[in-house]
Length: 440
Image (cartoon, rainbow, N blue to C red; front, side, top):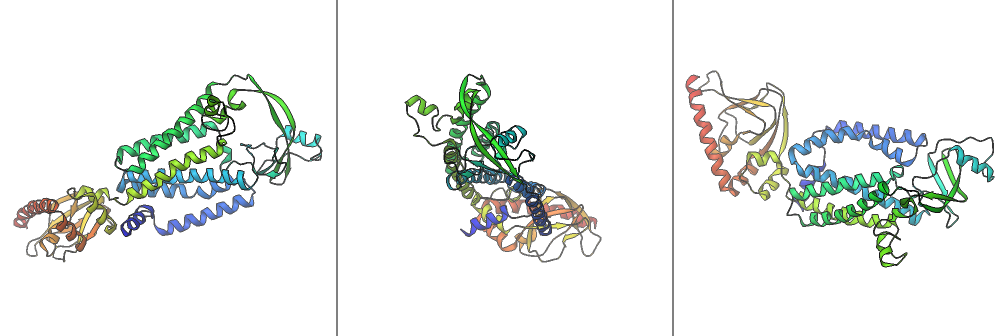
């Protein structure tokens, strides 16, 4: 459990972005949110403005996550987006079940035609003017009670095209992840569930885009909207016949929804859940296994730079050592380790270039090697249990990851193959120092 928490902390916390930038972004986000609330903007815009300042920060941090964890960073992004998607469906279900919401998404707007109907129905004064809508209350035609449109948070995006594109991306993302983490059983469950959900949306999308002939006559509600400040109330003031396509006449129920294809084939009606409840279930059986799969995968998460530097270590050894890595930044010209110092850390270069210098008996140091991204140094003194045999200086701005002596020794004792490989590298590097010593 400790290993899981350590791995989560490293993956989910900010590593590249300084804390002062996080605090400034949080303050700016609060200002944007407060401004949106004061202006009386609808909920989806309030949420959008709240999230907007975080986008560049998260993108910048995401680059670091991808550099160090590759596909696992993408896994985390999909998990986060899917959890938010499920939250959207949960809000919609809560609006339907607990707030007396009605399925009018997107909701009727306070346009001139609806406003004229409000005047005719005696709901508004002739002198009042239609205004832009911020939030909407709708009279539920079934209960006669006022309630919000059950559109979740981003209800203005509640279109079939949006659903199809989003869930297709989720499906392809799940298929990509299974190629990278094929041994994750929970991820297979998520892939199967995402495939079923995608089948539903492909059917709905096909119905929405291809069956567009207006050949069905239905009785549609006629809305009258009344604006009071930022609140727009939509009243049902009657019904009118309307010629619509198959989708609008009921094709939106899809395969497994109430009055959908499944019930039509069986000759039953009203047994299956309404579409919002059905898709909440679909998303639950996709998102829950995805979250579990991510937590399972995080248990064996390791930094790719560490794996590149020490390729003979097992996944378990790499995952145990990764939380011990410490990132350091050095300006060009900085001495990272000095010849003669006590060897206490092992270094891996993740950005920039360093030069290795060696001096013999106080002579002028001579550059014996140049090391760059993905290469390492500091292993000679640690393996030989002594002092640094060379100076390492930053040639450019450099970023390194380092391991303490105890963790490095643990890895060497746990992996005989890695110790053998590093011994060979040590002998080669020591041999390169001999000509330099003669020149100095």
